[in-house]
Image 1 (cartoon, rainbow, N blue to C red):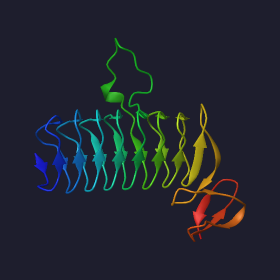
Image 2: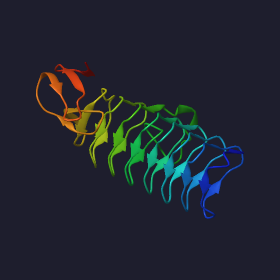
Image 3: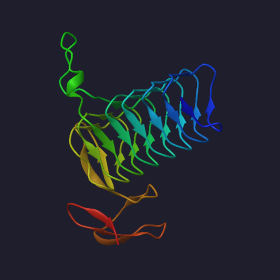
Image 4: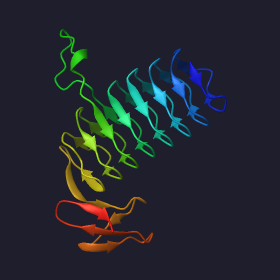
Length: 190
């Protein structure tokens, strides 16, 4: 087990031998981290979080209460997972048929926010600084900086990396001072 001496793990959490947990990460009560999981520095895993064996979590990731991060999920730095949001790892599950060899990888890129009770269907990529609204269902790849809402989710606009919705077209400057170039299909920092 490679748990950094500065990590804080609640005595009611279960961390299996072999798991990696970085410096200053906080693992709260009733969390289960499986043996192959890799968790970076400065992360926070809230109450009742499950982290599977084949999971990589970057630095400064916040996973709120009641989230299961199943095998084949990759969370880059600065990702926020809201309370009770859902990851899947099998596209067409059946109880009587084992499909563990069919897991589809899910990538959540740097700075993305996944709102409370949203669902991320496996095999998709959430672009950097994308914002998935509470309760949305993601069943296709999400562009960087996209604001996604609905069931199934559709793009409703663009978000600044600071978390403010961008208003306007072409060249837009957020109140935080970052300037973006916006087209009908993409949003990129200028």
